[in-house]
Length: 257
Image 1 (tube, helix red, strand yellow):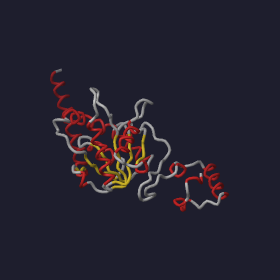
Image 2: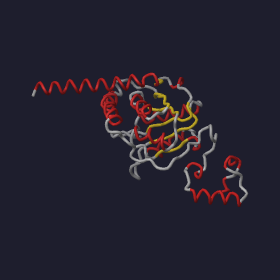
Image 3: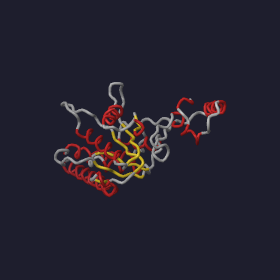
Image 4: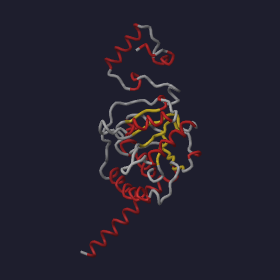
């Protein structure tokens, strides 16, 4: 039994080291540690995390992500912020909390879209592609988290770059680094063995990036695909009211609908 136990331990170590090396090898070139050198992308994806610590006080990783997100938007390195987080109960809402704090940083509402079903890193990235139509994105998180996030993004076919928050020392974040060692093994199993799917998707939503509507929120009837009868009714209403067609709607006041 001692020999079997030793062999099992060696196998676990080999699998863990191999998985972490694979993740690092595929993603390290896509991570930028100096935020001033992060390349421009249309969307910056902010991963949710708890805003408070169990012992009290604000979570430093939460604050670092928001500070970086605000900095990238203000410098023009991202056109729009997709804020994703957990909202599993009415009393816990990460996206709304992040939205409120970013507003305090003078980020306008038009520059932010909230994703309320980012229950995990995988769910956040899968929903960014399948719900919000993201194809190119800057991932905003800590350097210990970015390799796993980028690995998932590449698996999903996203053109993703990682922009790391201002660094704390490895010693300060030692427990998060240790957790990531195991999480990277799990993510490989999720993707290649268990064919993981997001917990919840929902209707498609088009992000109001600079390419589509600079400085404006796209009206809800343009962001969410309408059933054909509803779309036809809206078209008839616009015709009755002599409203310009969709390509001219930027000049139409909100009172139309």
